[in-house]
Every structure is written in C-alpha cells, then in structure tokens.
Amino acid sequence: MTAPRSLADQAADWLVRRDRGLTPAEQDEFLQWLAADPRHGDALAREQQTWRELDLLADWRPEHAAEPNPDLLARPVAIRRAAPRPWLVPVGLAAAAVLAVIGYVAFRADPVRSPAPVAASGYEQRVLEDGSIAELNRGAAISATFTAGERRVILAQGEAHFTVKQEPARPFVVLAGGVEARAVGTAFHVRLGAASVEVLVTEGRVQVASADGSLPPVVGAGERITVPLASARPLPKVDRVSAEEIARTLAWQPRLLEFASTPLAEVVAEFNRRNAVQLILEDPALGALPIVASFRSDNVEGFVRLLEVTAGVHATREGETIRLRPKKSP
Image 1 (spheres, rainbow, N blue to C red):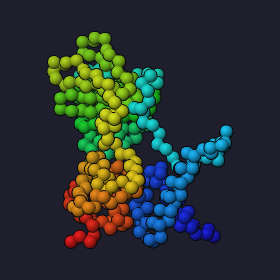
Image 2 (tube, rainbow, N blue to C red; image 1 turned 90 degrees about the vertical axis):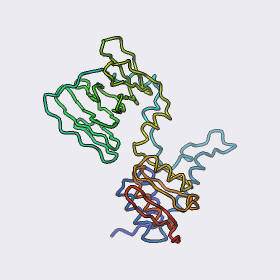
Image 3 (tube, rainbow, N blue to C red; image 1 turned 45 degrees about the vertical axis):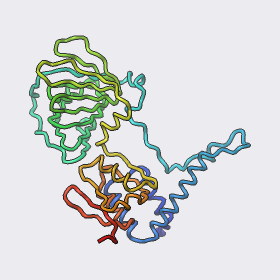
Image 4 (cartoon, helix red, strand yellow; image 1 turned 30 degrees about the horizontal axis):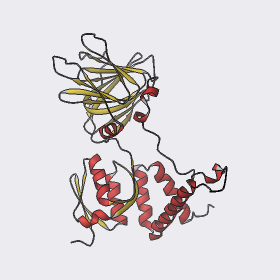
C-alpha cells in the first residue's frame, strides 16, 4: 500500500509542474487542490520560499575558495529555464538554415481539392500531416493539401506562424493573397491584410522574387517583408525588426506568464493585451494586490478562478468582459 504523500511533497510537485507550464486541465486541478484545504496554500508558500533561497545559494561563491565545487552549488534540477526564442538567434547563425522563397504568383487551384478553411475561434496550434506546426491567431483560416511532391497551405484570412519540418524533397508552400512563401525547413509568420501581405522570418532566410524577374533581395531571420497587393505590384519593402518588435508581432501566441508579487493591475493589463476577453477592476484599490502565480497567457478563466478561490475576489462575467471586485463590496 502506498503511503500518503506529505503536504510538502504535494506542494513541491505542483511547483515543478507550474515551472514547466500547466495545461488548462492541470490548472483546474491545481485550483481544486488549493481550495480543498487551507494548509495547501501555506505549504505552497513555504516551498516557494525554499526554492528562492536555493536560487540565492546557487549564485553564491565562497570568498576564500579558489575552486568552488559547482556540483554543490547547482540550481535545483526541477527548475527549468525557458529556451531562447528562434528569433533571438543571431542572423549569422541562421544563414545556414534552409532557404525560403517568396514570389508573386497568380492564384491557382491544386489538383487535389483542399478542405474549406475554417476560421480559428481563438488561438489554435495545429500539427500538420508532416509534423510541421501552424499557430493561428483568432480569426485566421487555413486549409492544407499535401502531395508526394509538395506541402501546400492556403492562408485565406488572418495571420499564422509556421514552424516547418525539414523535407528537402517536398517544399512547404504558404499561399496568401497571391503571395507565395516556399520553404523547406524554416519558421516564419504570415499576415494577410487588406492592402498587403507581411512575412516575418523568425528562423532561416527568405528570398524575394518579383513579377518582372528582377534579382531578388535576400531577407534573413529578424527581417520582415511587406508585399503590397495593389495591381501595379510596387516593390516589396524589407525592414530590419528588433527582438522587441518581433515579440509584439507574435504577442498573440500564448506563453507562460510568471508573476512574482506583481500588482494585480499590471497582471490584468498583461492578460488584456493578449486576449479578447477583457478584465476590468471595479475597485482601484484591488489593483495593488500582489500576485504570485504562473499561467498560460490564454487561460484567463483559470486566472480569474484563482483570484476567486485564494484572493477574495468576486468576478462577474458579461460576454467578453469579466468585472473584478472584492467580495466584501456590494
């Protein structure tokens, strides 16, 4: 018979799972665990303090030790640090990546009829038949048709980011508004607007071919090309994009948000910037409430439930608006 786990073990397990990022289902389970017993929150707070002290110890070096033993000072193995985003890789290193080609093409039907595009109701991540990943922003619509010689995706509306699995013998093609992006193995973001198509390369290189066949410029990782959709076909514009601007462009992609005694007003602003559902603080004093939590940026409901369970906050839901106020308020 398995002995029951101590509260400290349970709290440590939840810290490990939160550090690597909880799924929405796991966050629901976490909230239920917190609400089940007041001692759970106390145990979690104690474990968090222990981890903070271990972090400080990892950065400490003895003053008189010539060669301190790094194994004795290593960070706890349970703490994982996020891997760098592809767009932060230096362009020089990305030059070795497989080339992508963008050209002006007339819309043509594929021999095999593509499924009708379906607009995403929110953020969606789709694993395509070949293992490539398409991340769709709310309102984006794609359809895909794969053959033995080509992988073709049509972006009918909106914006999407594609992380392409390398298959040199079978190019990956994204068609948006008459602009074709052809890649073998790379990562890029495509936005179909009313007047132009924007392609932002986050990994690899892109070559642009104009309708008149002129020598194309080379666009590298961390650069964006804007292709006008006007019939006159003006030359595309290529801009160098900072890491901060890339992050803003891709802010619709969910990521793990970590808050360490962050005022609730700042947390609300972060969620509102990334989601259609908007949080409103009805009592300004509530904005100073310190928040210590880790949440996926698209899990607004889970965050609100945490406030209701642990922070004495009352939430009123009205369509895509959630109003927050202290429970003691009328």
